[in-house]
Length: 101
Image 1: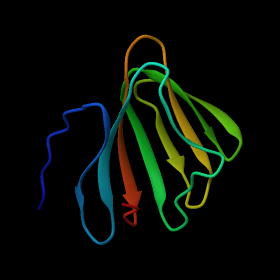
Image 2: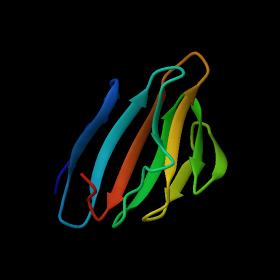
Image 3: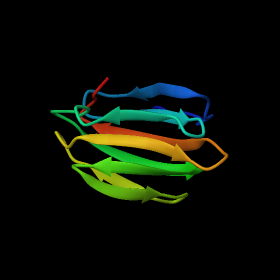
Image 4: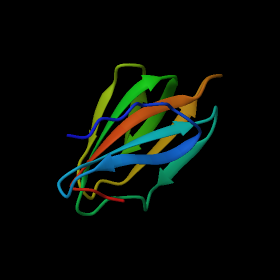
């Protein structure tokens, strides 16, 4: 068993994982973005769960609004970009299966 406390702080931080999956926290400041048209995880699905703030994503060319409680599956090899919107940071928990980092 492994137990982690999620304490969102600026940037991207891997919390831990196993050979089969991995958890990470990502916090983007207002207007900050990550990824882009070439960003993909060829062998890993990414589940992105929004715990705070608001934002937008583009996954495989499709726009997606990100609000607290949103759970988004970014399938292996899908291009993606995530951007914080509004005046507060976008806080997410991400699960990669298998690990991407």
